[in-house]
Amino acid sequence: MRIALLGFMLESNGFAQPADEAEFRAKLYLEGEALLTDVRAPGSRDPGGIKGFVEVMDAQGPWTPVPLAITSAGASGPVEDGFFRRFLAHLEAGLRAALPLDGVYIESHGAATGTAEDDPEGILFTAVRDIVGPDVPIVSTLDLHANVSQTMVAKTDVLISYITNPHVDMRERGQDAARAMLELLAGLRTAKAFIKLPILPPSVSLLSDRGPYGEAIARGLEMQKDPAILNVSVLGNFSLGNGPKNGMSVIVTARGDQHAADTAAREIATTLWSQRHRLVANLTPIDTATQMLRAACDDPSHPALLFADVADNPGGGARGNTSAILKAFLDAGIDRTAFAIHFDPALAAEAHAKGVGARFAAHLNTAETHPDSAPLTASAQVMALSDGRILGRRGLLADRTLDCGPTAWLRLEDRIDVVFVSIRHQCMEPAMLEHLGIDLRHLRGLVVKSRGHFRAGFDDIFTDAQIIEVDSPGLVTPMLHRVPWTRLPRPIWPLDNVEWTAPDSVAVGS
Ligand SMILES: [Zn+2]
Image (cartoon, rainbow, N blue to C red):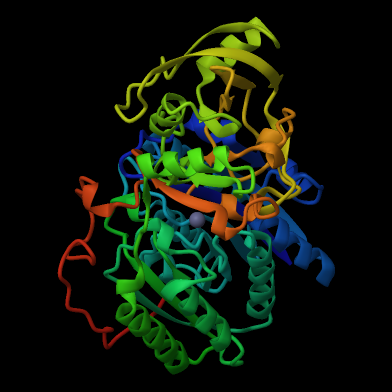
């Protein structure tokens, strides 16, 4: 069995700067044997899909993996078209050279847009199908925030999305993909149903353990106990994509039984639609958050607080360097509080040049042009420095390595600690602070630039009741009425009044 392995992962924020080749290569680019070596070793850089896929395939017996390439820019803007075309051509050449193939696994995010294309994944899946032909199984995993097109469903045999948010199941879904591949190789033919819902949910309403979205995922898992159903994927969409693929999606893949797929998809979509009014954001204004932290600092019996700077989450393509909360906390005299992680390569480099212990006037965001990333100046002391290579210990990054580039822990105004990094990432992993020597258990406040993945990383220190989602400026604000939408399919709820019922025809052929 010769199975090709490849990956293209990008969550495109329609309002962020394009993701170019340099950004993809800085974040993740593995090809050939190096890809296979990575996923078979501890501390893998692969997000998890290929690792899980290879684990199951290795366990079932002899096979021939054909590792082509994977690249990921995490979340950023639309993919720059020149790089997308070059990467696609590289994969196409690799596939043609590898023929004959028995199957293809694609690790995808599914919410990419491009500077020239609305549906990069649809183009990729079509290209793969055109090369391998109609009878070779193609299986892909998708992030739970994927913006799915009809083409993506049509060109693959099964799409499998994550079911946990925070995403701690990327490897397990890769394992599911391998098990589906083995069934397809044994002769299974799938029947697929796909429903697009005109719902644009605020990002913070899509946690998988609560609310209508969690209930839909739970119902899908229940349905998968029916032998007729191979997979149920309920996709929350990435609202800030601002593209024609936006909207929540339901994909049901049955073991040949089209009626079972259609019925299951209609039930989940109809229930989600009826519960959409519960998909809401309840954010705390910055001044209220400041008062809450003031109270926690004044009263040692008060639990410490974690503030999520959800709108400036680099995991949704935000800049990762807005300073509104930091300014408010500095102005209010707050102490024993840490911020992580603030993207500012120039300041990190300056701290590295000056060395540990140095004191200087830190100028934040000197290289930034976005108005949300306001400049800020504060007295600073260099507390610790690192190369930013982190081995995660919890949640999404457990046992994975991540490169934040040259990193510096600065103490501002002798009161507030900030971790500055040189590669933009969201703060979802305690090691991002701890590797520098910051003791999270002695803080009164912690501010993380993350929408929700931090919940799986800091849950041993901060309970749900200690977490505050702050209403701050940023490119991924869940306050959807403030966003200058241009390319959404309209009408879409909650921006518009929409009448909707599940369509009569939901089956997808190939
Ligand atoms: Zn996601």
